[in-house]
Each structure stands twice: as structure tokens, then as C-alpha cells.
Length: 289
Figure (cartoon, rainbow, N blue to C red):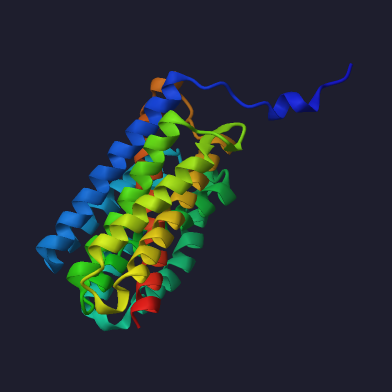
């Protein structure tokens, strides 16, 4: 008996649930971006509080939404890393991301110690180590918003960066809800038009919000916004691939209505926003000199 290999690459049919999921992701993105933008508008302390809330939600949704092995220890490590990164950056705001590197450096031996401490229940070690490492990188990456806010013109740059990320992702998700074709992969309900629309939305936000910054006036502001949105959209597609390629449902979860399934969209959105932050920080500082 022979198997037709083309059957495995056949494009999955479009379902109403797929479009609903994209709308849900768009709304979650708008909410997360709105909270961070409001915090950046109100000042450094308000932004610190907003970043802390988003970090906590990311930790909980990632650990319990993806059924990470060893999540109790991972919870402790992630909270310590987030708090340490925020405190270090508030203490040395002129050092950029350097304090964060110190936090990550201290986290490395703790990651291995955590795996050793799991004892006889130490299963899926590589999966646990990888998932918790990605989480630590994401929560400390969010602290870059605190650095950007305390720079020159930070009151303009930070909301602009968050606006480009949010607008790009929201536009991309709504586009995928309507037209997810041509798809990047037959099994992933994400298409190229969404990335194009997201980049255009980010460019518009960048042009409108950065025209007051002399170094980023005109085309530079649009380029920064488009580049940030492109990074965010591609990371979002990567999150979609991760959800398809791995089995994340925890043991004992009853069908698609399990709590882990409900937390996955939150984890995907917050992870995308968090990992977009370092790229946005580098782009803004590279072009603003």
C-alpha cells in the first residue's frame, strides 16, 4: 500500500473558529498594547506597574497555558527574573540592556539547579528547560520599555514603539481573519497579506507619532514603525507555528475547552509583544543616534 505524500501538505479548510481566534488575538493585543501605552503616557512609575502586570500575566499564561514541565519552579524563576530585571534597569537606567544581561547570567545556573531539584518526576527535561528559558528571556526583554522611557524623548518614543507593535499585530490578525492566503504553511492559518497590512499599519503609526523627533522625522519614522511591525508580525507567525507543531495540552485536560487552551492565546500575544521589544529598542536607538 502506498501513501500519497501530497495529502500531508494539503491546505487545511477554513473554519469559522479560525477567524474567531484571529479576532480574539487582535483584541488581546489591543488590550496589552493599550495597558503598556497608557503606562508610558502617565510616566515612569506607571509604566513600571504596567510592565509588571504584563510580565505576571505572561508568566502565568505561558507556564499554565503550555503545560510546561516543572512549572512551579519555573514560576519562581520567572518572577525573580522579571523583578530583578525591572529593579536593575530602574537602578541603572543609563546602562541600556546591560543590567538585564546580568540577570540572565545569574539565571543560567538556577535553570539547571531547578531541573536537578525535580527529583524522580524529572521528565521532559529538555522541553522544560527550553520553555522556561524562552519565558525568562521574554519577561526580561519587556524591561527594555523602562530603558526607552527614561531616554531623551522617551515620552514620545515609547508610545510610538508600542503603537507600531500593537497596530501592526491588530491589523495583521484582522486581515488573517478575512484573508489568510497565500498561507505560509498549509496547516497554519496565517497568510502573507496580513504581514503586508501589518507593516503598512506600523509605518503609518511611526510616521504620525515620530514626526516630532527631529532624528526620526519624515521617512525615518515610517521606516522605524514598519520595521517594528514587521518583526512583531513575523514573531506572531512563529507563535502560530509553535502552537501547531507541538502538543501543549496537559494531561487530564478534557477536550478543547480545557483551561490551558483558553490561556494559549494570551501567552501567544504577550510573548510576541515581549520579544518585539528588544528589536524596537535597537531600531529606535540606531536611527535616532
